[in-house]
View (tube, helix red, strand yellow):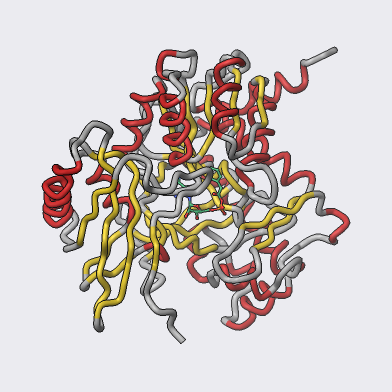
Length: 441
Ligand code: DLL
């Protein structure tokens, strides 16, 4: 069989990744004009929302002109459920995915054949950036199905020539047997599931840290540097962060390089990134924290114009040691929606995680329970002690954690220390918050 064409296309890719930023901007402008026209001409939602504020695709003459265009929000997708945001005849849509919302109907996303090709190639870029290649045996524990994680990683890794095991989530003991028997060198999963895998393996008497595993690509939920260190150590790997969302393409929007591991390269030839103040909608200067807004530049079935991700982050265009020129998204600390306001203090679960991971005798499993006490919200943090800590020591441990959370995050909370194994373990996206407040009517 002749493998030349696919090898050649891989060789062209790195040129895009190191393209000078001025050329990248010119490419973005050209693609953005096409995207705006395509959206306006083919999606009634965009036609209406542009007309409502009197802007036309032709009003865009520079990248900065994008601020004149309206945002798109998750509700726009819900209102047009299931296929109302498609910009091509349904016959050209060859795949749909969906993300389950907390409220009823899922958010549906569609792909043309070209969109799938774009997705596969950005995924291959991400996986290569983590230092993975054809020599690797990849264990893919992201869920296969409507969730974009499983199939997104699958096709990207196959494109690179890796040997892919499509395990999906769940049945953790069997996963460990396969990891070991197949000699997996790379693990794809959510960070919370990776932790579950590491822990279950130890219980089975298997130290994955001593095996051939060498790289982990973790994402789909917020996680902290502390959890990164724990996973690196327990699994004997270099773990890289991976970011994406169904509405934009799935995983593959941005990922860390193995060399830098300091922010995720967002692929600017395919996506245009902005950071805004979530209250005013104004762009914030580079380096300042705000809500990430993404416009697709190469998505035909369902173009997204200024999609408000609700994810809070910062971006930088400072050069990275790996030589890639695409901007970096600094770790996504959480979603706007995940933010708790406890007695006036804003708290993200990942901030609590960062504190817990630094404490002795505490395991990296936790849940935050929010309750209404009178007119105020009260926070209880449930954590687990490590094996071997005597129950008599739990109250002292609780006090220590409570004190550290207060001094580092600024929030007062109750802390309950539980025995090892008492908290639920994740098999996909971890549930970090149990909200027991009465539902607003
Ligand atoms: O979670 C896509 C994905 C799959 C990304 C596998 C990475 C790995 P959704 O289910 O639509 O898509 O959820 C998207 O998850 O808006 C963020 O809030 C959160 N998220 C995703 N990656 C990260 C990350 C997939 N690395 C939503 N850090 C996003 C923090 C993340 N949050």
